[in-house]
Length: 526
Image (cartoon, rainbow, N blue to C red):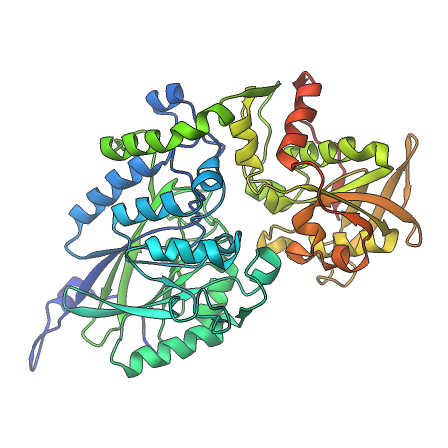
């Protein structure tokens, strides 16, 4: 097993019998979960106006990343640029261009590899294949058998080897094991255990003489730590999926940058291009990782935007302007749709979306809405609300889906929803028409949901397990997405082709006049 050692300056200069130790320095630049944020974003991770951008109030955008990457390369004699997955989905740029603009920008920035995120499968293997064909670098996924998928077999790689400054570096890709629940990979791909897949690739690479190994993992911070603990030979894991901010200077960080598990350095750089990860590592002559230091670089207004990239993104935005600039509503205050809220507790954006869903189909006898928190992708600031902002919150082009479900089925759905709350999973339920209480001290799927109440006039009464209720969700969840298999298996009189969710929310807000966000205690935790 490799040993992580801190070398003092004196020992770095020590001479052996055959000469000086040949330490190898490498800077790993990395991004993850970019989600088509080619333009700058606000502090709420939603769209940012040109005026605010000019005043230095915005973050990210491809033009800032180009500048920052060039500067980081200039600071290092030896660097690589990699991505932890989920370039797809999140703004109208993806809706309009699919993966074409992402490929263009990644090629421009000089990425050398990325892993497959779950959202790379949102439009099936066909769009992923088109994206791969447009890239100048490999895209990787080790923990899946895709030999039965003709669009990917023979093209997608499990790992690759690159040469940098005379040394070989092995790169391995990971994707979520539960991709079947999270996206639309089709029936020809079988996803497998990440630790076993990584170890298999590590063994093959080390046998081939590669002793510096980096895993590009779209599996989340928790899984990355498990993989690091369960494998040998992995030097660095560049993460994604959980949108985790790691830092040594911020009190908002979820952990240290890098987080060390044994000999493995784990990094992640939040999401949406808000940070560029910069990890400086040193290996000894035997390939042992002896130093790993760094910090994500914030892409704020201090980073000058590259003029050429700025012009190209403006050109690409022209076909989108009519749609996204249309003002559809106003809000009296900012509406919180932050990931850490909507995947863990009742959140204002979750209430808005779920209330809008029930309101739209109430005349069909529907009284309960369940929306996955992971389907809520951004906040909205106070004032005028444009369709572009609504589409940033709800980018997946989901439709309303209705069904009848027993009270027991509703409880089972909520049980699934809170089963991965500690991991910040997107299945966490935002609801309307019900109130529920859950207990994190109870094991997942073992009765965490301890109380469910439904409206009865002005009162709230316990849900009847044998009763039948009208339920609205989105078509992704209704078909079993995010683990809501109960909807697919037991939903009665289901209809999946209702109006688009973004239109439903926009129209609901418009009807409210100046919408006022709120929380009312509909989700509580013991």
